[in-house]
Image 1 (cartoon, rainbow, N blue to C red):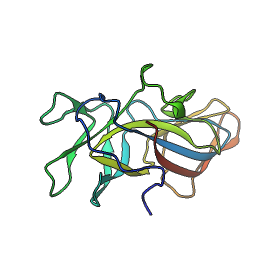
Image 2 (tube, rainbow, N blue to C red):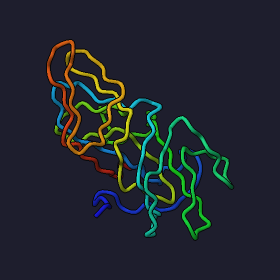
Image 3 (cartoon, rainbow, N blue to C red):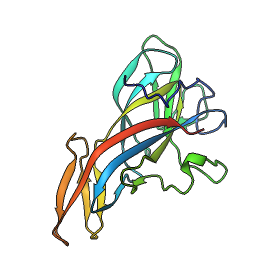
Image 4 (cartoon, helix red, strand yellow):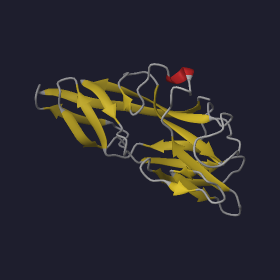
Length: 191
């Protein structure tokens, strides 16, 4: 099944920017085996590619992109979102935004976590937070460019992690192999 058991349906609610505290926030958790890699970095301009499903419905859209640098007005609202769309046969607007937690938003699953990077080899860790209204992400596509920093101090800027076999290079500074393998992802409600 393409639905994650941790990702229950998202109730449609108030539209527009990040407001109502009743709206659930979803985090994308990833897990990978890292060899001679200190961290994987998803920069502030990283474009997230996702499959999404209509909340409370069956319709899905695949390969939707969410760019945190783009803001679109939400019709009938004063708010904006990084993605504004409609599902076929519905009048309701669905939105998604990448969220940067503030000190007011305390999320126990995100305590001591730096969003936008992954460094805990073999352990699920959140890398991005989404505010979703009228839709829910059901799958993440790890399309680049993704930055990988090695334990030897090298940086690989345009890594593609979409290959099922993983990614492998040689750190020219240390002549050591660097590898990201067994990449998995889960979408979980964190509030």
